[in-house]
Structures are given as structure tokens and as C-alpha cells.
Image (tube, rainbow over all chains, first blue to last red; front, side, top):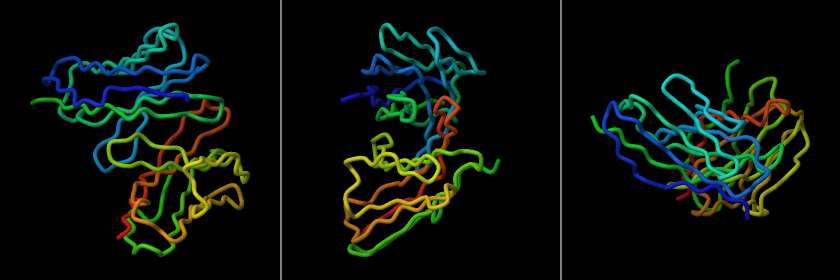
Amino acid sequence: QKEVEQNSGPLSVPEGAIASLNCTYSDRVSQSFFWYRQYSGKSPELIMSIYSNGDKEDGRFTAQLNKASQYVSLLIRDSQPSDSATYLCAVNVRDDKIIFGKGTRLHILP
Amino acid sequence: DTGVSQDPRHKITKRGQNVTFRCDPISEHNRLYWYRQTLGQGPEFLTYFQNEAQLEKSRLLSDRFSAERPKGSFSTLEIQRTEQGDSAMYLCASSYSQGRETQYFGPGTRLLVL
């Protein structure tokens, strides 16, 4: 059974601090990794994708991938109250299919 | 690019009734996915189409569920004889087969079965 594991949280982070979200996956052949943000009652919104080992930065977001450890993370710098949401990690299990973790709830404390 | 659209956004029905949801993908996307999401869970895969062909159905998809994509554009998901356990958010996503499987979601249809 291919799995994507995330800590469900909630993760509470003071405003302006760095939020660190983690995800592990079981399928060693996975090549594509995604982070989605989901506000309560809304649908998932893609915020980052990463395909190679190392870091990928986009504004206040940095995705980190370590395929040897089967680990992907998302860092949010200068956290804002608007970052409070559930963050879903998704991993491809073949060319045409991805599976999702259960998500980590992030709460930014004003 | 108008994004993925879904209709209706909300549906309340009584147990035993049939419901149908529609999804319009991003126009150039040839892959279309249906997911179900319940509270505290990530999206669970139900089925997907490449063009008009339905290539996979999850074991979660009982015989009461059927999906179509007759012309390779919009898709419909029908649930027959709804049960209270069908209450969930039904999400549609689309992607382009040459695009590293980046899926973009519609706003979802929230179903409540009374």
C-alpha cells in the first residue's frame, strides 16, 4: 500500500516565524511531489511542485526534497495569519496518478 | 484559462435519491480526475479519464457510482440511491498528460445526504 504520511497537527506558529511542514512517502520510484494549501471549506490550491533533490524557492515558500530519505518538506517564511490552512502533501505513484496525505493543519498566531 | 469549474457547488438530498455532478476541466487538459474528501482526510481518488476513456476506478467506487466523459471534455459523476455515508466534498481536478501530472482542482461540490 503506497502511502503519504503527514503529522495532522495543529501546528501553531507565531506570526513572522518560519513554519516547517513535513511529509514522508513510501514509494521509492516517486518522481513528482506537490504541496497544496486548503482553506476550510475550499478546494486544494497548488502552491509548490518539486521534482529534484534539494531546495526550490518561490517567494516565502521553500520546498525541500530528499529522495534517499523519502522526505519532502515545505517551509513558509515570515508566516502570516492568511497562511493558516491545511497543507496537503501529494506524491505521484505513477505517471498519471498522485496520492495525498491527510494534511497538516497550520495555525499562525497573531 | 478559466480554471476547473464544478456544478452544483452544494447539494442537499434525501437518502435514496440520485444525484449528478458536473465538472468542466481546463480546456487544454486531457486528464480529468474525481476525488472524494471527508473532514480531516486528504482527497481520495475515485476515478480518472484520459480524453474520453475511463482508465481507472477505485475500489471505493461502488456500483452506485458512475462517471462519464462522453466527448473528452466535461465529465459527470452520478451517485444512485444515495446513502448518508456519501456525504462529502466531491472534487474534480484536471491535468495535461505532458505536464508532470500537475493537477488543478475545481471548487468542489459539497454533498449532504439527509
